[in-house]
Length: 323
Image (cartoon, rainbow, N blue to C red; front, side, top):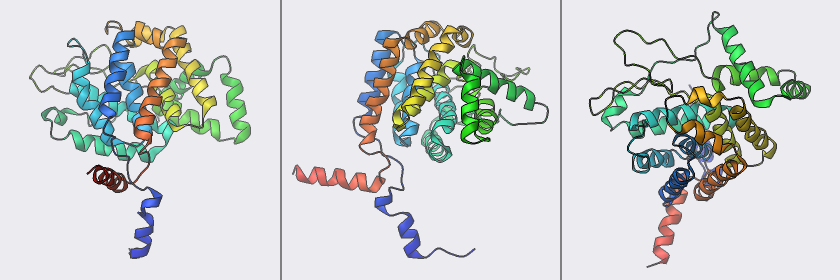
């Protein structure tokens, strides 16, 4: 394979092109902590605030901030939480995967890779799931397509058919791709695998219970469900800016998920979470969701898409100016 010239490589990585990931701002822990405390005070649940925070952070391309979010989670969640470090890591990974539908593939690739590498020193990290669950086969294609169609209808009813026709008018393959590559295989969740003899029992949110060995056994890939997927959509779209109509659609989508009662089954066995999503889907709750994303974007946005070396150099200049 031919080599790239030094000048071409330098241009690809030029600071003005901002080729690197977004560094974590110094105050990001304060922002995440405030959001967690507000969620607890307003009874918005544990998973919803973690979901919106992670989705916004993936959008802003800041894996260092994702690691900060994961690190502080044990200190801001109640002692009774089922979100152990392993379970919260799996939840964040599942959120990142679904961010692909709203942010594109590259940021998720880079953020998930850096996130997993940053967790590697924890003993429980060896239990992070490694088996895929979303492979398409001739046998499961009809079921995947049906899941995607059902999710599409749930989010956009009663305008789902009209929206599909409008998208097809823009490009005939646009709704085909959205439904068959995103809503089916990615945004909808596959059914939980049947528990095999000798494996850990599944918890009510579709994960496997952790072993009581102090480090945690296999948790399995997390399942977000219908309503947290809407939270991912809202957070991603709000953080990326410029897509107000889509933010509006998914705010309504969250509300419809609650009106359809889907949250009851999704959060069965998780005390308070179903009621929390109901509150989050209200006008007041949705305003809080948007403002929380705005706070994260404001904190990380000062460094958004900046070259990490550039940000470090600027911080160094700031320190020098104070001497």
